[in-house]
Image (cartoon, rainbow, N blue to C red; front, side, top):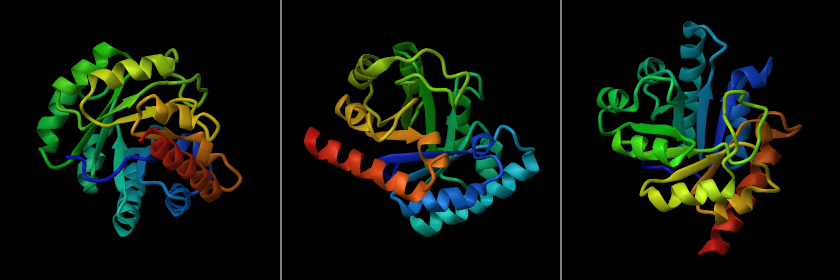
Length: 214
């Protein structure tokens, strides 16, 4: 069950972060206005994933932001995260929904209408829609669906949508105007010289675009 906003959803991808502290990066993003943090740590062994996830869960609780674990339902449950985000090569969303129960959050990736319908049928609380624009951060993201693809899924979906893929402060307003409830970013914050300032700029653009949309 989704109880917190998804406006600025920062994915702390440990492979992208490199030798930078993922918890410090998350803290910087939250200081800049991030409303949700996701841990994506496919490059880390499970024991390390759990340690990082536990630290991020504690940080998120202190700041009342949403904390989601990518892919690993076991890690999410171990650290009492708010929920898990799954793609279509992960645990089937319907099974995850059953194991999570009704209170925790299930996010599911959707790159087309078929995936969106399947995610909704499985009980997704929000959809991660994209890639909207071409991206090099996630090699397996697939072809960009553009703003038209986002609008099509928006017309179908009764649950919140977080748009992802190649989103920056320069194009985030168009994404919100096309119907996204929030934007998810990786490199736009993690690789910025000042992650807090980058998050703050994105949040400002998102808030202004939402007001303009009405």
